[in-house]
Image (cartoon, rainbow, N blue to C red; front, top):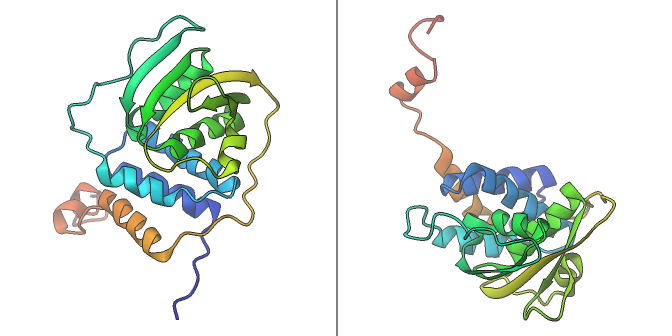
Length: 211
């Protein structure tokens, strides 16, 4: 019988960050994704399988557009097309926080909402989401309902209001399946370099104490 996993909040964040960086996700976006995963965990949602799905299909050199379209006026609607959360997720949240209504086809609805929920805890900004642009609900309400798809979905986002910051509850976090955690570590291991003589020299570990 294998022992159960007990992954702390710090282990979750560090491993997600390393896995994203190892997959060549931009460092700043990787930081945001790690925070999004913590926000989902605090709401008792395990983000690991949707994250692994995005990591498995992430291609930094693909022919996608280099960024989200130009920002329209505040209060206008930005129809952003099909976007990957590991490339453009934080930009979508930025636009919504700035007062632009965002509509997109995102490859992981749950991770996008995790980014929005993390923004609540970091900037006191409550966002709302909708599947059709008419029926709106708070981000935490949508996540906690259990009806959010982990995969692709059409999503609308808009800013609702600023509110007082509340701390994340990092107790009794959901725990990953062992095989999923191993897969995450394999992505994280891609940031490691072989321990050969040339790498030791590059790191300063030369032949003398002065190297």
